[in-house]
Amino acid sequence: EIVMTQSPATLSVSPGERATLSCRASQSVSSNLAWHQQKPGQAPRLLIYGASTRATGIPARFSGSGSATEFTLTISSLQSEDFAVYYCQQYKNWPLTFGGGTKVEIK
Amino acid sequence: QVQLQESGPGLVKPSQTLSLTCTVSGASISSGSYYWSWIRQPAGKELEYIGRAHTSGSTRYNPSLRSRVTMSVDTSKNQFSLNLTSVTAADTAVYYCVREGDNDSRLDPWGQGTPVTVSS
Image (cartoon, chains in turn blue, purple):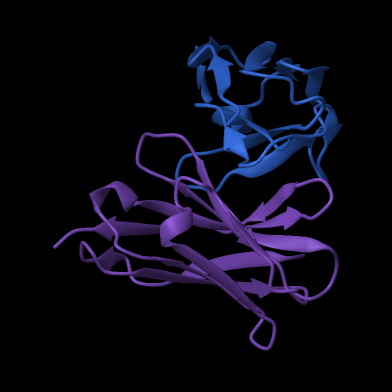
């Protein structure tokens, strides 16, 4: 199965600053990459699919980029509601697999 | 707006069968082109994809759990279900039901999740 590796494990950012999260796949997933956000005590929520397409209702400050094995999620100006754990997920190969997550915390 | 809600026992004894149901509201489970999927998350660990079922009856399971998993869809009740047999403490997790696109595997939306503990 494809192994997804996220870095860093924890990212400390001040409100209003930019956050850049990385995700690496153990083999090419083309653009079959999604990002999900999970807040404490809540279910994950789809942010990005197709590596760069925002899901319905997701603010423009969230953007995804990359292809093949290297991907990035950028939050251009962190809002208080953005402090959460972010997971990348590939759907190129079966089974679908997730990264270990990056926790974005308040600096 | 489509919503998913899991239900089932929060405590299961070792070696028994874990059974969960997901109720879909806001849309017919038969409409559109979707799979109906289950994902779990042990405390402090990664999300693990369990598998998916379609209203056509087709199913596909994660090889790591294939021998113990059964999923089905009940269109008359607008529900889908998960059965996991011979459970152990390693199956303790929060279980999520999720709608999955059948041409892009988009996982959206997710249910709130239900915690299941395996313990005697």
